[in-house]
Length: 194
Ligand code: FE
Image (spheres, rainbow, N blue to C red):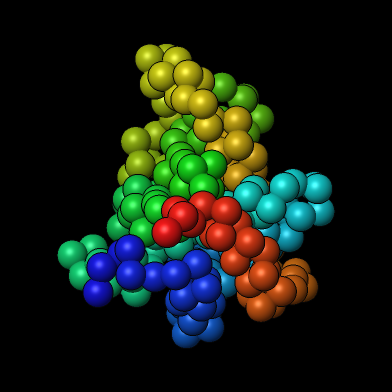
C-alpha cells in the first residue's frame, strides 16, 4: 500500500476509522482521550469562526500518533517525540499545505509561545510541560527568529492555542462524522487533478 493510493474519500474514511478504533486511547497523561482532544480542538476552531482548512488542521493535529495506521510500519505509534513531523508526512499530498504545516509546526509553536509569551507557560498542562522538555524546551532566540519567518507560523500558533484548550474532561463535542464532510471538502481541494 502506497500513500498515494488513497482517494480523498478513502483518506477521510481511514481517518474516521482511526478515530473510531483508536480514539479512546489515552492522551499522554491528560484528562481526555485522543479523540475527545482532537474533537475539542476542532470545536474551538469552529467556534472561533476559523475556515475549513483550520478546522481540519485542529482536528488532525495529533494524527501523527497513529502513523502505523497509514501503512507506515517503520514508525512506532504513541509516545514518540516526533508525532508532529510524522503527522505532516501522512497528510502530505492529501490535505492543503496549511493543514500539513500546522500539523508539522504545532509542537514548535508551543516552544515558540513559551519563549515569547510570558503567560503561556502557566497555561500548559503538566503533561504538556513534561513533553516540551523532551521536545527541546522553549526556543532560543535564533529558533524564535527562524520560526517567525515561517509563512505558516501564525496558523500553527492558532492550532497550538486550540490544542492547549482542548484537554478538558467532559466537554461535549460533535462526533467525527460531523466533521467528515468538511474533511472531504478540504481533501478534495488539495487533490491533484487527474
Ligand atoms: Fe494535541
